[in-house]
Image (cartoon, rainbow, N blue to C red):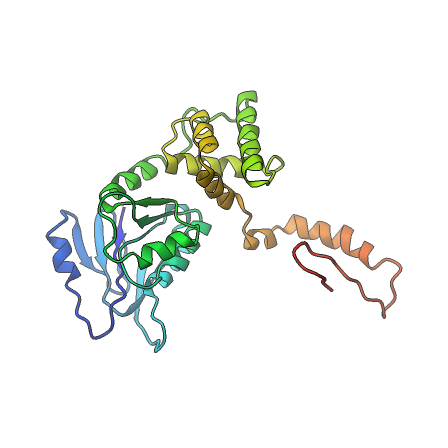
Length: 282
């Protein structure tokens, strides 16, 4: 893994972070300059008060021109999620304000791993940033810093389907429907008709996060935790952008639904559509 450490310091504040980190890690600590390509087992520290983004495996660093709220962590996380997708991990540590909260949501939406400092152990000295991230519902794991390396290694080493994950067997289908029933009972949402491959891919991801060694083990954990049911539910929600990229669905809408709406209508007619959650639509 490569590590990029983003601070939200004011422009006039000098950072000693590189020197501090060099005392505490055997990894190479490198200035995160513009154009630097990330390498594993290295720590990159971009200059303070800069806008840092990821593009094609390199850091893109530019001075901040914003006179308003400066949110460098959100900006970096957003680009990291889009660049690395499932291989991205975002961690929010101690700090004031809520920078990083929206960025973690972006990483989560792209299938990456999200963590926030908390729990028993080395909790945050300033809890605003971790609590702001947790409040979004997009944090996979809340943990003290001393436990985070083990979580990272476990999830990264498990970035493949568990060996005993049932595929298309009757037992696999039974477990899938059992998970659907737990979600329906706890949250009132029925995912039994959800695309099986997508459903089980999200289950696999939650198994890695929860350190479940089999689907049955995950089912047991899920049935005992309403929090985990909520996390899986959020992972399963369809992304709006993916929905609008579904060409087959919109071709069907164009060919079969829209013509029916306008059948027997003249040019002066108004067609009203009702959308769940909205009073009316036109």
